[in-house]
Image (cartoon, rainbow, N blue to C red; front, side, top):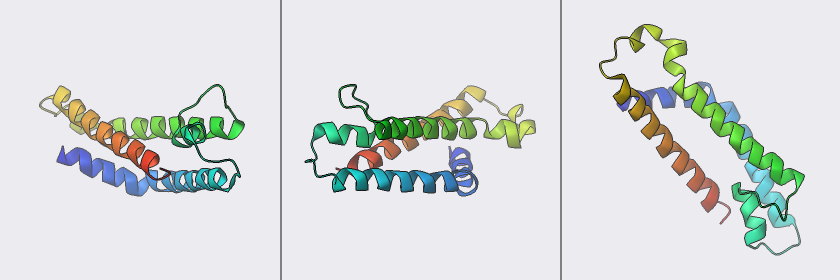
Amino acid sequence: MKYQLNVFLHLLKKKYFKLSLVFVLFFSCMILITYINPVEVDLEVFKPLVGVISLENFSFVDYLWFMFQLFFTIYLSYVFFSYEENNSKEFLVLRKNYLYFMLSKLVLFLIFIIIFRLLIFFIPY
């Protein structure tokens, strides 16, 4: 698990940093647009802000925000799970238990996703 955490921190410094800045910029713009809007902020306005699409009140900006969050998560997971294949193929064969290795990778990434989604929920709340 310690190795997976080091891999994640390395990727955070090298590959995720610029994309995370774009994410923070886009997220702050979404919050700004929502709170400048003269309409009272209720549950229907709050849902698209955290990434939940409702088909009744669907706008292009909500769609872009949802798609950006979706592709952001897919890209992070792809880079994280393919790190060993791209950087250290020789160590993949030497792993004692590959199932445990992938399970620890999955647990760490799920913890990251939960913290990430909680931040997205609690910041605008």
